[in-house]
Amino acid sequence: MTLVACREYNASSPFFKHRRFVTNPAVAIANVTHRYGERVALDALSLSIDAGEIFTLLGPNGSGKTTLFRLLSTLMPIGEGEITMAGHSVRHEPANVRSQLGVVFQSPSVDKQLTVLENLTHHARLYGLGGSAMRSRVMELLDQVGLLARARDYVSTLSGGQRRRVELAKGLLHRPSILILDEPSTGLDPGARNDLWTYLFKLRQEQSMTIVVTTHLLEEADRASRIGILHQGKLVALDTPSALRSSIGGDLVTIRATNATHLAERLTSKFDFTPAIVDGAIRLELDGGLRAIEPLLEQFGDEIESVTVGKPTLEDVFIARTGHRFFVEPVIANGIKKKKRGH
Amino acid sequence: MTITGTTYVPSLPVVLSLAHREIVRFFRQRTRVFGALGQPIIFWLLFSEGFKSQTLDYAFFFPGTLAMIVLFSAIFATISIIEDRNEGFLQGVLVAPVTRWSMVLGKVLGGSLIAWLQAMLFLLLGWATIKSVDPSLLEAAQASLLLMVMSIALTALGFVLAWRNDSTQGYHAMMSMLLFPMWLLAIFPVETGSVVGWLVRLNPLAYGVVGLRHALESGAPTNLVFVGPAVAWSVSVGFAVVMLAAAVAVSATRTKGDFR
View 1 (cartoon, chains in turn purple, orange):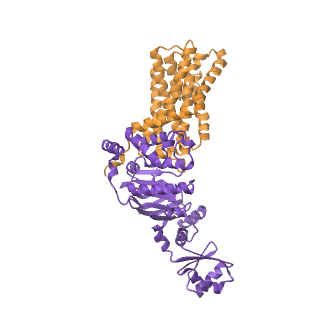
View 2 (view 1 turned 90 degrees about the vertical axis):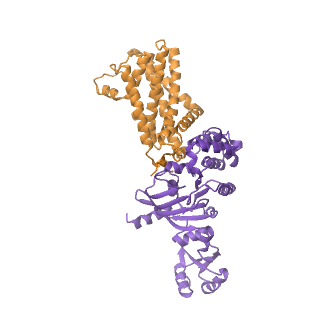
View 3 (view 1 turned 180 degrees about the vertical axis):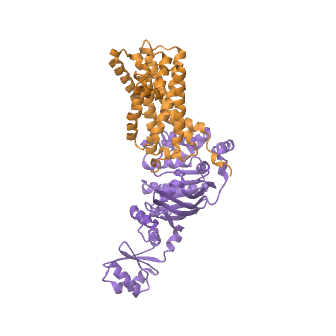
């Protein structure tokens, strides 16, 4: 019944006629630079996201991912460069982009003084839905996000996780072809986080929706089909999670020593290693795991405080590409940026 | 290039939906319902009692109190734009495929209907309690229509002031410095030749109050005595049009508060 209603609506409204096209790439970002005053938040960024992908934009605070989200959501005008979404230019055809785009903000955008149902109804009207098609669509989504029983409750009485589900339902009302979510796991417990991702996978599977998620959580990024890692406004890595990890090499050895610099020098001369020092510890990429570090322990056992051997994580990928720990203070990052630019 | 950038959703449902939301929110805030009507009534009683010795009575302050109700509820209604921004609701509207003018019109229509409804209640109260406030049906209709025009003008003015304000405190400062004096200049008798007299001439709200005096035959005009109903109406309508245009223009600008 819902389907019939929707088809009728499609036929009568010119607004929905663009929806049938599946364009690839779903999101094309070309040479986008964004400045806040003198500070460069995005630095000639180019990236394309395929239709039907779940893409995570991973980056620490200050990496530029929130800026990119604002540009993608059409909230902020594009400075330099171009962004095309669902085949429409964000700069020249914002209305067409908006009708194809579902946005879930990090900060709440629901009206706490209205009921769940009222929130969704008002939002649906902003997207040109109306009448019985709108009502059945609202109910369908409430059912999908498991809030049918709470439809007539004020949003102020809902838990954080439930409110996030209202946000998600809002973003999906108009059947967008692209859904973008800004740090959707913020404030969610692990169970609710899991539910959210299960739902996102379902959306991609059943509606071949393109989903873009920004996050600073490494384990969250890991769930995506592809990850783009942002650092100081630049894309430093772009691949599937497993490909990124294998780009590091076999195993990752972290050595804490009394004098890390000194030990690193001798490791370089004695063995054929290229150690890096990150955060006061020596990092080595090795094949062969525990066995490979045995000669090392024999030689320098007294100087070594601890050795960790592990499979590389996304954080290791980040460190390998940037030479920084993942959680750098954004102020420091910006300072470096400014110096490089010369003003 | 094809002009496909204009596929915004139809504006009328958007305007009505946003206006409806304003009204629903208003009636859910009980204190706002009482405050917006209670305060002007208290002012009316105190002003009328206080100026009795100057032969200014309840009837004289009646049109001014109507203007105050409209002004105050318009202001409180547009404070909601700051709340909408701070609470995040606005960001959802800004990324929807709606035209900016329909967003402005929705907010202004909702706010001015709230203001107008309260003015109508007070009009009934005045008609029931003050002997000299006894308009014919036609006069009452004229006054109601003028009150709607004034409501739209003042709500749009409130929107312009509120849009770029990120805090309600900043808005309150604006209210005491600009809006409250504007109201005082609209109701008190002043000498035409003085500087203040000129300020009165430049004050569009004063024309609205004079228009209400004409329509309700309530309290002979003591300022802008030379202004007839036609001029009072034209200035009020012009005020509303200019303020609406200003609100649409200002809504195209973005503030830091949009990005949080």
